Image 1 (tube, one colour):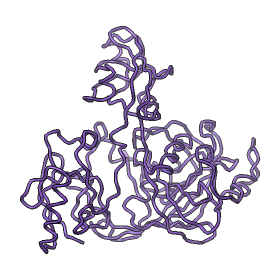
Image 2: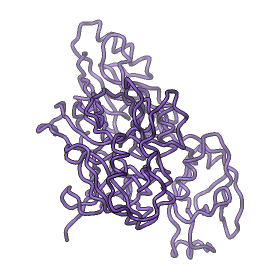
Image 3: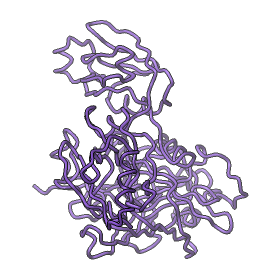
Image 4: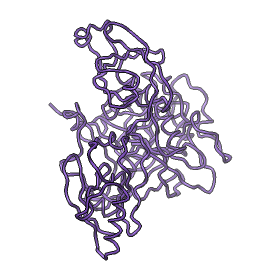
Length: 487
C-alpha cells in the first residue's frame, strides 16, 4: 500500500491581519483588496482579484549553514512513532551538499506583506537556520529582512524589511466564515518560479495532520507545491483566509490535498510575534486524553466527550487548583469541551496569570474549579543565540536551570550546570552538534554549577591561548566531551 507523506512546503508568507494589528504609523497606499466588492457568485475570471492582491505577495530567499542532527535524531513524541514517516517539512533548497553538517544552503519560499511599514508573515520552517533572509517584492526589488519572531507550535514567523516608501499590504478575512466549497486562490513561489496563482475550493475544515498541538487546518484542492509554504490563501474578496503550509503527497508534488493555517488561528500569534518577538500561552500543567466510550464506561462517566486528566505536573497551576488524574474536564468558561484540542486551544488563548473556570467531572459529580493559568514552559522567551563568553564567541546562549527550563527540556532536578538555550547556526557550537536543551556540566575537567562558572572557565581557556575549549555536555541522560573552537 502506497504510503503518503505530509510535506511541509517552504515559503515565506507575510500575513496582514488588519483586525489584529495596530493602526500603521505611516501613511499607506491602498490596501490591495480595496477594489474588491463583496462577491456572491463565481466571476467569469479571477484576473481582477489576482491583479489586486498580487502586489502584497512576496518571494523569500534564504541562506544559512546546515545544523547537524543529534545522534539518533530528534525524539519522537509519544504516539507519533508510526506517523513520523508521513510528516515532512522542507523548502526549496538549491545546495547539492545541504545534507552535510556545516555546509551552506540556499532556499526560497513565499510570503506576504501585512503592514505598509514592512512586516511580512511566513512559515517558521522557511526561515529556520537561515543566517540571511531577503524579501523579493512583486516589482522585482530586493530588501534584506530581519526575523522579528517565530512560533514553532503554529509554524509561523514574522519578518521586517525597511522600505523607502509604504508597501502594498494584504488584510485578513474571517476564516470562520469560510465554508466547504468556497473558492480560494493560492499565490506563491512554487519551485522558485516566482509569483504563481492557482485556484480551487475549500475541501474540508478543522483538519488535524498531527503536526502540532493547535492543528486546525483548512484543506484545499488549489494546487500548491514546494516553495508555496508561507504564501497567502485568498478568498474572492481579496482577503487572506489562510497561510499555505503543507501538502499530502506520495512524491513531494501536488495531488490536490493541501493545508492552510486559518487566519483566525494565526491572528493572535502574529500580533504577539510582531509586538514582543515571542508567544505567551496559558498553561494548566496537565496531560490529557480524549474520552471515548470504553473510558467513559470504565470510569462511570455520564458523558461521551471531554478531556481526561492522565497526569498533573508537580507545582503546576492544575495541581494548585486541586485537579487530579482521573478528572474529566467537560467545560471551560461556560463552553463545553468535546475534544482535547478544544481545551488545548482555549487554555492557550488565556493570558498567563488570569483565572479560568473549569467544569470538572469527578466521582460521579460535576463541580467548578477555578484555575489561575500559568505560562507554558515551552513558550518561555528564549534569548538570541549570541556569545556569552567575553573572551571569544562560541555561538551559544546560556541560561540558569530554572524550574521552567527544566520542565521545557525535561531535565532532572539533580542536574547542575549551564543550560544552552540557543545556538548560532553558523557557529563552532553548531558545527559540533550542540543544540538548545544541552547542559554544560564541565568545562575542561572542572564541574560547572551555573552560568557564571561556565563563563569564567570558558574565559580562562580563551586567555590561556587555547584554540578551543572542551565542554562536557549532558543530553537526555548521556554525556560526552566536545571541543568547541573559538571564533
